Length: 267
Image 1 (tube, one colour):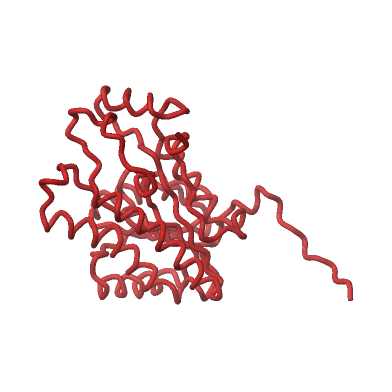
Image 2 (cartoon, one colour; image 1 turned 120 degrees about the horizontal axis):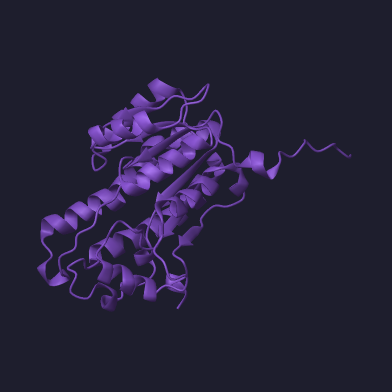
C-alpha cells in the first residue's frame, strides 16, 4: 500500500531548535559560553549549569531571548550523583522537558606526570568522566520522554598524544589523566549511543583541537605550525559542531566522535 510521505522540513529548518530545552554544563567557560549562545540563537531555551554562578548569570544576561524562550542558571556539583539527580528534578520543574544535554564541564592539570598528585588525578577523573556519566544517568528519563540528543565534549587529546614540541618550556603540559578521561568520554559516548538508542536518544562526542585563548605567542606559533589549517580553533568552531549534533540535521548520527581540529590529528 502506497502512503504519502510527510513533508520534509527544509535543511535550514532542520537546524532550528525552537521550543527545545538544552542543558549546558560548564556554561560560563569559554566553550560553554559559545555553545550556549549558539543554541540560544537557534531558538533553544537554556539551562545553564555551573559552579561559577556569577559567571553563569553574566552569560544569562547576554543571551538572546525571543518569544517563547527562557533561560535559567543552576548550580550543581557534577561529581555527586545525588546532586545531579537534584539538578534533574530542578530542571524538570522549571522547564518540564529536556531535549539536549551538552556535557561540557571539564578540567585539566598542567604539571608533569611525574609530579601528579592523587588529588589532581582524582579530581580530573571525577569531573571529566564522573560528571559526564552522572548527567547522562540522571537525565536519560527526561530525554527519552521527548527524544533527545546528548553531546559530550571530549578532546583531540583523547585520540592522539600531545606533541611535547608544541609546549616547549611554556609550562602548559597537557596531562596524561586529561587525555585518558577524554578518551573515556569518547568511549562512553559510543556505549550510551548503543544502549540509549531504543529510547530515541542519540549520543555523540565532539573532540576539539586547541582553542585560542590568548596563550603565549610561542605556544600559538608552535601549535599553528603543527596544524594543517595553520590556526587554532575559535570557540564558535566548536559551537557549530555542537549545534549540528543537537539539531534534526544530524537525526541519523549517533555514536560518532566529531573531530574539530583543523586537521591536527590527520598527520
